[in-house]
Amino acid sequence: YATNNSGGTANFDFRNIAPIPDRNIADANHVMFYVPVCGVDGKIWLNNNLGADYANTAKTSSFSPATQASASNDFKAYGSHYNWGRYSDGHALINWSSASAGTAVNGTTAGPIPSPWTSTNFITSGATPFDWRTPQDNNLWQGVSGTNNPCPIGYRLPTETELSNLRLSFSATTSAGAFASPLKLPFGGQRVFSNGALNLVDSRGYFWSSTVSSISSRIMFTTSASIAIDVSARVFGYSVRCIAAGHPSTDGTAVVSAYTCSTASAGIMIVGTPLSGVTQTITATVTRVGTYIITATANGVTFAGSGTFAGAGAQNIVLTATGTPTVKGSSTFTLNTTPNCNFSRYASVTGCYARISNSPDVFKDFLCHNLGANTALDPHTPVVGIQGGYIQWGKRGPNTTGDSRADWQSAANDGPNGFAAVPTSGNANAAAITSWSATIASDNAWLTTGGAKTANDPCPTGYKLPTSAEWTGVNSNNTLSRTGSWTPGNTEH
Image (cartoon, rainbow, N blue to C red; front, side, top):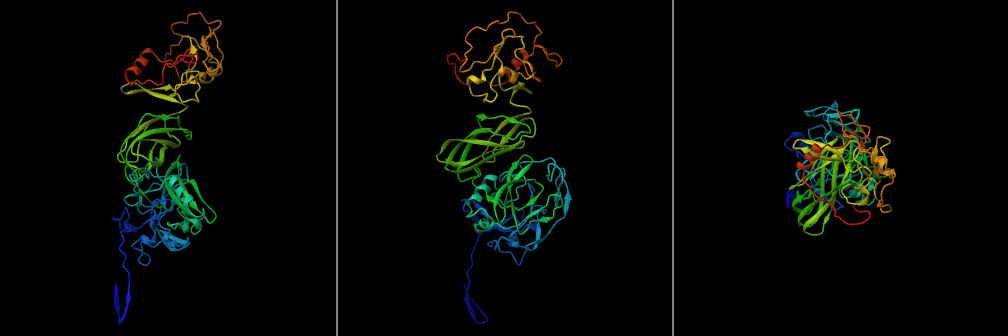
């Protein structure tokens, strides 16, 4: 456009952009706008941290939504510091006055605080689990539908994997590489868990992810020497940089019309034990190929899978679990997608359980393996090692320590005690057992009365033989499925 000002003429350009409004823009303190940028990792991100002065219309001398940090220590790009899992309720706002000084807009409240969580102050806590709220909740920032997702509509917190991929996309895994990237990540520092004071401003950048890790959450932090992924207590205050959510059906570029959460699962979940080798296989009906990021979180555990659909139609996705189960029992895991589906997984307190319905409203905990089976093997895969030993009715077998799960695996055939060891690939146990007991056990040899086990009960401490009525209940209240096939052979039964 040509202009005339006091006789002088000049040209100026006017650029019409579509800024992205803050999710809580209805609040006078959050009239903020952001601009999307494409990272070297191929993902769409916001160009500034949530709450940055450049995005804030109240910062009249700084407001310029398309402008990013001019250096790692550009305080106008530092933005807000969030307790993990909190909404943009004012607790995170900082008035920055220089590269090393700022003042919290709201004060602090000693936590953790119980429901309802209405405080607009930054909440502190100096005791385990170092969270701002009680009880803890792992689902507050999970995906675009996270309860307290502070990111603009269509955006969400990045996962640990996405931050790790972003880190590796930088020209160097240092703050210089982070600043040289299209995201221009600055040194916003942190707010301290114990008193909410600003710390390490102008020397480090901390960025939350949505990924939980036991009672804590995962972060990425930048220094002049390195960029790393780490774990942090949720009561700290860190920056939030939002990532575009992708298509709602996959959280990526692919499109899925339906999901089936099958029963294909592997691994054992034990309360208080970090997970390893726990997976769930689901099936997606793909209508457009592309990337996907699927998660489902419950009970301190997140099942996650990401990748690229190369073809349309039915495609399997293997979700791998991370985290540590916090309570015993069945938990429902719902996919972070629309449409979605859900599956249930059970967490035991000491090992593998099969939680089986014994009546319409009663569940029983069964061991997943037969006594004498190799408990390191998947009980749902039909191999010789899960068959277990053989025992005469009413006899104790080689239950010498009270934990027959271990005793039976190492025992030899013991005729007098009515026990035959499990067949193996090297020992078919095809011949008769020497000295096999001919003594008839008493009618009450395995009868548990008032919770008291008999001397001959072969089950480990805390377990007993099921009664006929309990087996009938199992048979009447569950859907039967068969795994494997009958194959003749010395080690097949």
